[in-house]
Length: 235
Image 1: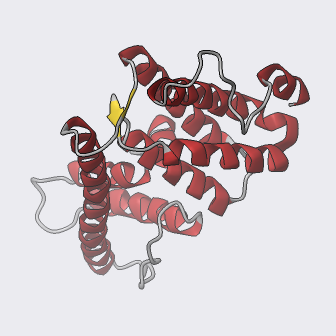
Image 2: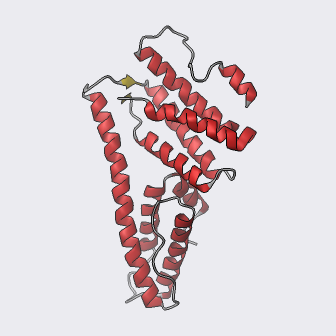
Image 3: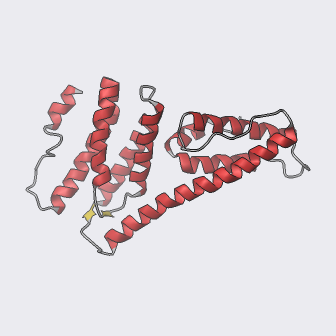
């Protein structure tokens, strides 16, 4: 097997980047000194094809299932799979680039002073990034969430992380996590606590940043969450 368990875990949390990496790993395993497709190449492409089929089936990416089946003919199958990989790589690179452009624009908008901006401390920024990574890993490993819901949560966190900078023009994506935490809690019950705890900590940091920027009195609590000790005891 050319794809390790560690790679599969990363693929689940970063589907676009992971799929591009998957294709490049597969092509890096081709035997360059063999004319045509070797048996080794065929096995690499079959493994990659199987993984892509599962990515589509689990709806980790919104892509179409390959419109061909494995025939057992090495030359035909390798050619079709390789052509499909080229199109898939182009799509994933494009989608990943769009996310990066959104991230850059958000960063430049805040940095250039084109409008009001919220500013995180470096310590808060690093802590949020760590919490987002931990949340993504927990959601990716959760067996209690439907695949569609799991995919939506991971996509939201991926976009949020891509837009994380010291200065941000708005905090809408952060506050959307509050609703997500409520849904996860409703579906997983007590099993949701590790996820909800991390989202609460992110919300606390974001609220501190927002209240400071809005010049609210020190110690003002988050209106939507109420008393933190109470919510902790109820989870």
